[in-house]
Image 1: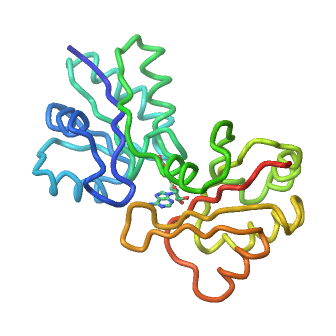
Image 2: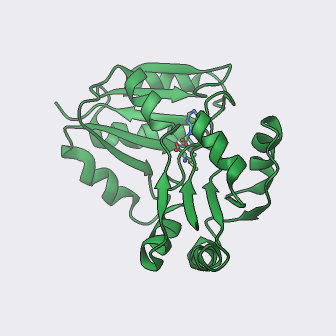
Length: 224
Ligand code: SAM
């Protein structure tokens, strides 16, 4: 029977994949991947041979509905994966869920890795209530967003790239003050995993002392 699965994949350590995720990937008739060159590494590691197609930020808008129609017409099992983590979380996935809902295609989202959860829990900052902001807008709307968060009392989570981290932390100082607590979780699940904890000025100092590399999540304490 036609069905769609959203399958989370490891954010670094290839062991971080569930038995069910592997079974669904094996049983799928088609895997839609954000970048097939990235996903092929995972599939080869687990000796999974399933045809792949691409579904990325630039074609998701039109291709999601087409794929869903194809799945229904040809009674396929489609597994959607992104390069890492949970599809739909700062990654393609939202449009395919919309398309499935519109077409009445049954779908399931498998639980699994997403970078923000180990970052939040490992940060040591309150994780009972939090806000996920994902990537800040790079230009238009960025200052509005930063200002909007000034009165946020819950812990705030951002995704950021290494080459923008210092700029972003400096902007945080402007909006939230140098003494606000922050944690940068870097290279989670990988060999060089690191949590940098401190006030904004302390964490800035840490990163100013060397080249900043790797994937990172910023966990910002809420306003006290
Ligand atoms: N779908 C993914 C998820 O569920 O977390 C997020 C994909 S988003 C395009 C990529 C961003 O996630 C990176 O820029 C970084 O902020 C964060 N990220 C992904 N893997 C990470 C890791 N191993 N360590 C720290 N941050 C990571």
